[in-house]
Length: 209
Image (cartoon, rainbow, N blue to C red; front, side):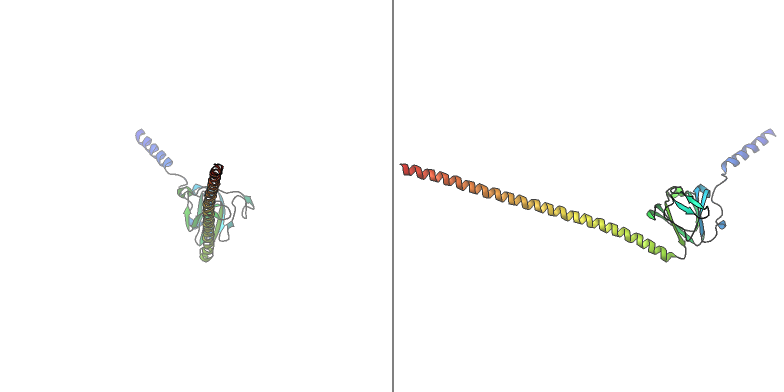
């Protein structure tokens, strides 16, 4: 009997310690359509901030949380999130919607952002209605255009630098050729003067005879 009771106790302890209390985020059915929530801990725990289609937070380091009624700093502190139906969000690893982007994050639970390397890295957020893809595409197009413009500017700077280097090299070649020509002319002039002096000396010797 004691052995049976001991086995039951051991089995109960194994079950108790093998099943985590918080194994996942709460049911998505608790998230109203068109909204979402970001959390400060895994499995949708810790502090929380609500999101909706009007959420535009350029700097998570200092923004006014309407529901909390105060300014908060959660930059690089988001670890999990829930996105309800009808909402999409882009998350950026730099302020003012710059840097790398995680998105669009859409309907679903995201219990641990470490799985894709984004835990404690989000610095700005832009959310929009699932039906406003056109507006988002404009933002994406602008982002791509700015990237292309930067690339083109960099290439233009490199091209101009190459042209400047080539021009300097050509100028050095011209300077070298001119220097060599001046040295040649100087040697010829010096040789003529030398030969002329020798000829004059020979003439003088012949005259004296």
